[in-house]
Amino acid sequence: PSDCVSRTRQQPVLTNPHNFSLDIRMPGVVPAGSDTYLCMAFPVPTSRDSYIVDFIPHASMDTVHHMLLFGCQTPVSTTSYWDCGSVQGTCEDEASIMYAWARNAPPTKLPKDVGFKVGRNSGTSYFVLQIHYGDVTAFRDHHRDCSGLTLRMTSKPQPFIAGIYLLMSVDTVILPGKKVTNADIACDYTSYPIYPFAFRTHTHHLGKVVSGYRIRDGKWSMIGRQSPQLPQAFYPANKELNVKNGDTIAARCMFTGEGRTSKTYIGGTSADEMCNFYIMYYMDSKHAIPYMNCMETGSNELFQDIPAEANVPIAV
Ligand code: IYT
Ligand code: CU
Ligand code: CU
Image (cartoon, rainbow, N blue to C red; front, side, top):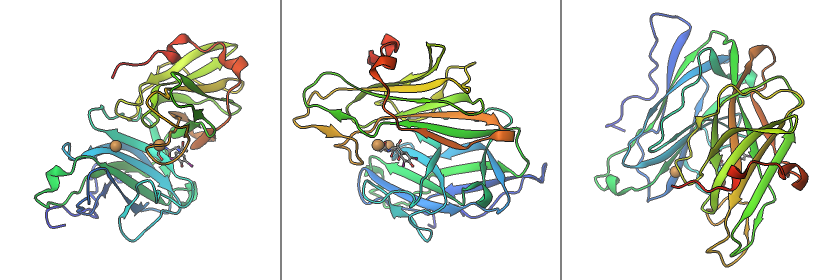
């Protein structure tokens, strides 16, 4: 790691004793080949609750395809970095995504007064950094990579807590050659209001467009819509839209089976598919819920009224 700066040093910010920074960086790695996924866990440094208020990416543009940051209790390893491609995952328990950086996409900022709450009490003991190294020809000189993130953190309680609402399909089957298959997901929302500010879509190769909506009194309002073939970062959500008790949250992934000669199922490899719509929201800290998900198939009756844009491919 001689060509990487110390990754453990913390930089106290002298102007405010509550604030500190944490470097989450690969420890000087050389990926074995193109499309290698490497993960590394970092303990959350305080037992007391603290809050992430900003993310500063440090990524080698010529090699890093994407970076994701997760929070969880039990990473696959706590001793060193590991290969976290399709076989080994990130965490033994459920991970939640907190940040996504993707090449050629602008990184999203948290709004003012909003923080991700972390710390052993809040169920996040570890951060896991996942880096997808794309083209590794830049490693022919055997230099070592220390890409990662700096987290700007504070121990000062924040008025609003950031969270993730994940809609995912568990049962989609895409028939070979069939032009359009929709994966529809919907759940009733029964909690305190959330304020979406960013969204992320994820499919593998067959996804054409992914759209997310709030349905209130039968009216569909778009939270976000994107091509999953564009960089899978968090993009700004449609503003001035909240989700409250009594609403329905819904998402559709439009897939094509063209070019396949057998059925495609939901699964972890690049020959499988996924349908994910992530909503990053904030919530009043008084009754904040940091993670929610929806895995229910939406009914045909409900999705009769989905806006036509959900089936209009986005040019990439
Ligand atoms: C089967 C599936 O759709 N898996 C997704 C969603 C997922 C994300 C997380 C499922 C679980 C999680 O803890 I975080 I259980 C999936 O694996 N998505 C990938 C990454 O794992 C985040 C992605 O890039 O969105
Ligand atoms: Cu990638
Ligand atoms: Cu996937």
